[in-house]
Length: 148
Image (cartoon, rainbow, N blue to C red; front, side, top):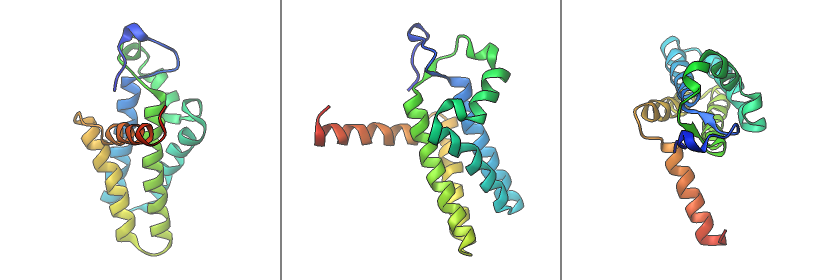
């Protein structure tokens, strides 16, 4: 859910960086599936994990996107860092589970789990963020159960 530029805050993430993140996930999963190389899924996992654990300051994609897309980022809509971290956490969990599947000699399960990340990234690039929907539902249910 992008924030308007009038609400600019240095803590928010510019939408071009969010799009880059989704594109990297999609390209990485498609590339790994195309060459049947689980190591590429490992690389994606290792790129996403620091962003989940430590936030955008540890995100390689954020750091690269901030520099490469600096001009587009200036007046771009902004995304909540909590939402981005939530989405990356889902991706990291699925990619981590894929790693376990590959190690446990269940490659089909690994590719299915990886494919779920790719599909979610593709759908998000197309305009519907499934992770955003889950984030909204999670917070709605949490509020219903526990209040604020």
